[in-house]
Length: 589
Image (cartoon, rainbow, N blue to C red; front, side, top):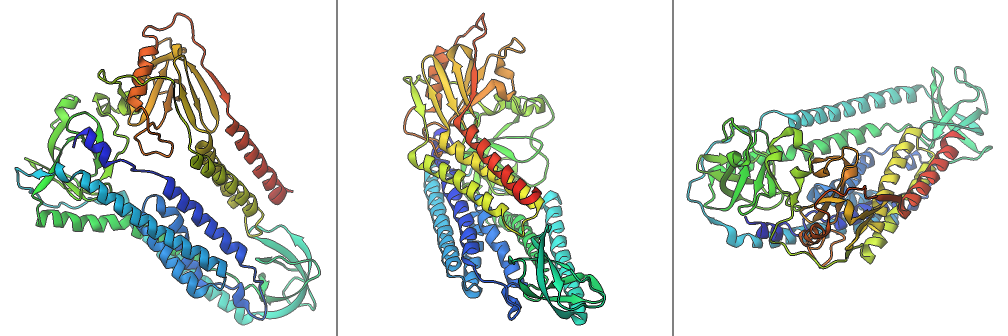
């Protein structure tokens, strides 16, 4: 596995464009479903707004289809298809039927594209497989009980407990319903409610044991003076609701279903791993890809290219003694050679074969598209966050690119970023106005909106310009202007250009600094498959050009590095102000 082959193997890996579009489409499907449901609660048919356990369980699939697409696209597609079928069967809102069906189709298309990309990546490695000179051997010790097992057990316990509490609430409501009487009433005032719109009612005739003006929380909106039918329990004045809106305890079902689904997602690799390890041992592969790996005490093991000290993937292995003996933490003492066998792809189950045995997988292989460098700093816990641990110096043989060069978003990137920021803000303002939203839920909505707006502004504005006299970097908040005289060193991290500045506070070169103010990351440059990649010079070529222009000796006088707020900062401040005013208006005033 050479670096050149690894770059082709990981080309386009981790691209977030499709997944981001699916998330936006999922959020839009939710919005269309809510906007299209215009039916009102009715005392003649309480099922219109009544509890629906099937819907409470199905909504978990809808959320999973939006959330899991980032990490588990296959499971997300399955959830999207299942919810679309349930929506077609139980939902009479045509707009929602169309929206969720289209989302399911998009998920299927995404999975098909991913499969094709995986097939193309496998072809890259076809001629890299060689016959194994040793016979894979070993036994499966199994994965020791760890955090994942505890998490699965806890989630299953939460699921069972949720169903138990749901049953208790149903029994309690049944007892209340057995004693309840219907009482005509009128809406006399609107009051503040924690879980939705709350109204004060005035009963047309007194009911012993019940206040003459009870307060109820509702889903629908009512006007003062509206005639409604209330259901009250003479033995419990706190149990009062509208006949049109029965108590809904099905959120316990959603909690139980969500915990169960998450337990399946977390636990599936544990079961799959046992099956795949058994297959690798029962049917030992006869060929593999030559690789090296760093023998460390803890998993995952960094899989290293055969021609350079860069990490191409990580593999978490089952427990067992490591090969390296205790000794100096030097790279040459910890690097082992062998073959990567099995389903060699990102997300595939692979094993490492070497003359001493076989390292079996505890989790699927994780390919690293950035190809980070690895050196002795990797073995020193005190230097894990140091720049030297995740970047590498410019190779001497690399020719410098012709300056100036620029990296800027495409028209599509800008459009997606602007649309995401605008859509998040509009959706947030709208959701904050929901009657059923509580103050703490509104805080979560505000944080989510600001995060989405920041992502959108980053995609809209982020750009880099490298000239012969200075570097300019613009992101969602800042606009950096770095004179070439302020550059202490320049390094490369995959397709990113890493610029280190002279550390004026310590009076030293910032090469060993891990302070974010002393390090700027510019990229990704062409060839990385990122959203803003361009066909042009590589990060290494640009870094070589900067290295030729930067001062080798620390300047005698401080070279000023300016940083001003970018246009994105004003937009984010405006979004925050709009959310703050909306929050005050709805939940405070």
